[in-house]
Image (cartoon, rainbow, N blue to C red):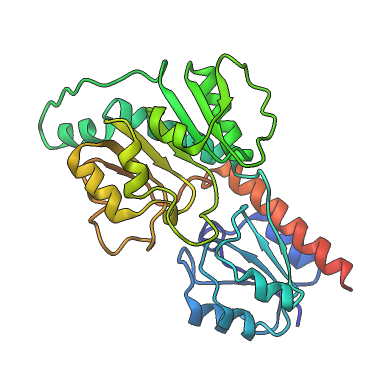
Amino acid sequence: MNRILVTPRSLTSGGHPALDLLTRAGYEVVLSEAGKLPDEAALIQHMQGCVGWLAGVEPVTEKVISAADTLQVISRNGVGIDNLPINLLRTRDIRVCTADGANASGVAELAIAMMFAALRHIHATSSGIKQGQWPRVQGNEFRGQTLGVIGCGAIGREVARLACALGCRVMGFDPLRPELHLPEERFHYATLDEIWQHATMITLHCPPPKEGSALIAAPQLAQMQPGTLVVNTARAGLVDEADMIAALDSGKIKAYATDVFTEEPPQSLALAGHPQVIATSHIGGFTRESVDRATEMAVANILQVLRGNT
């Protein structure tokens, strides 16, 4: 009854010194299969006797929580909780903790890197050279672009800060409109429709809409300027994949850069293999610095909850 399950792929494949704090506190650390996203059956199997769970992005069903009869706390090594059955967890009085801000720098830097890669056609040029070609595609400069940042929490505000420093005009959308302390001549809040219509680049840093629909689908894509770049390092469900493919095929969208997929790894390459898609394997927060911060915060959250319950 003193087991703690650890499932993030960044930890099961290589461990982390912060996990030793759990062992020294008297808990048995249980790792899921190394480097793999555990499915429902694996989670149910590993959950037996666990009082704590250091969780990643794996989908968690109500069946998993129902089988977790001793679980007291789920501690995410990130900020998203849309993969968890929150209502059932509240009913069971299972605490949910997040590592707020731990991976902000890593995800923000990846989003910016994707913008540069798309603007200068780095992915296509590199592939062409490796095939013996010498592609020279005229690109665009980052400075002077109009960037729409949707979601201005820890990650979105860091993207906005970096973009402003690099000479972008930034339009932000966030229902809470937090104060970002950015220069007025570079940043202002806007509506979603204003972003769809005026941004030359759009980056997503928000949870999916509560009703489960995509934030960007055919109606939103139709409003965008020809040649818009869309970046998604948040959630796959924010973008309707079929509508995005159609927009890429028509040339309406210049490029779609994504770190997230409905299935990971994707079973279909219709989107991931598209020539105008820059695809990465959910590595936004997978930097040494981000993993260190997120793991340390997640472990501290588990211990705080469990010590308060003993």
